[in-house]
Length: 152
Image (cartoon, rainbow, N blue to C red; front, side, top):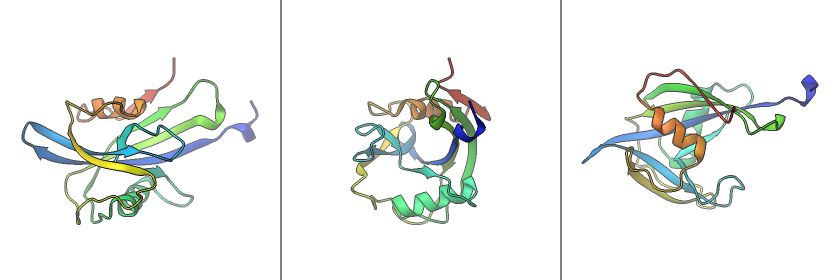
């Protein structure tokens, strides 16, 4: 494969966390009209890292654009390298962050892309969850710095 045909797409994910009655809860969104994994639950805030932007800055921007929250106390959790077969355009590097404190009340700011926001126990996620995010959520708190998904 020629170097010109290889593209890596970086993205940042923010999992807002809170203490629930039965343990930690995560804020998830139900995706709609995005063309990717619609009808599945995913991070309440996530998106591509833009040119000249750090993964941390992208996480902060996405949380503000999608949820209306800022002043996030972000904690970097891990990086995930993922692929889907041999499709070179679908090579991804994802940066996952958690956050327990922020300013503002999370709300849907992109209703065309988000059908619902829901706090869910980490040990009882709604079904279905975007597959690579289900793997990421299962890895929270395990101290792993690097994950892979889709490599067989």
